[in-house]
Image 1 (cartoon, helix red, strand yellow):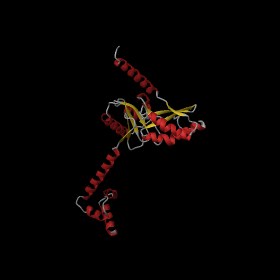
Image 2 (cartoon, rainbow, N blue to C red):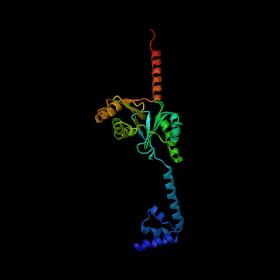
Image 3 (cartoon, rainbow, N blue to C red):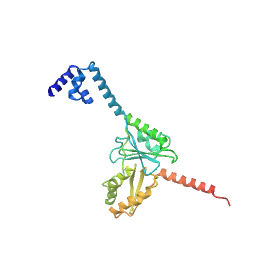
Length: 273
């Protein structure tokens, strides 16, 4: 067998065949000599080598993007299979004017119907504006935009974010404990659902948090805060008396306008006396 393999290698060298071609084709040792004795064996090897190269190039250009539902029906989690921001990193873009530092977010905001974009360690959460708009209409454009972006080689963000929610030496002991509990026990779970929870402040025993990504305006966010986050905080940190959600200015305006519209509709439908 060794003599046959040695002769096969000599045959490879005689016709200037690269050993890597044989490795790519996974040709058994006893078949190498037979293949090389075929007529026009050199073009055959070159043909297979080119095919393997084309396959590698196709795989390099192709991205398999998965989607995952979130507790918020208006938010969908897109998983591109490559790193987005990296471990522990998130960026929230609640409106298009916030996306000036992210070419990826700006590209997604160009799609009609996209309300907000949230970037996670290895995922992208997109929230649509209209509940009546079907995801089947928006998804193809989002898929195409994500694939085009990663093929472009552009940076995901162009400037670093100064995070105030990370533990700092300037924080008092209780705040450090709150931030550490958020980072180790709470945020990883919330990020699995395509969102995030950011520390805002701790005053008079009340922890104020901001919901991001799919957690923003999510029907179950209040339950998550009270039954999940608050209970865990109070269990590990007795000084915590409660947990409250801090709304983004955009959410406050939207909520106020919605309440005005709802009141106007109720008044117009009320029977006149």
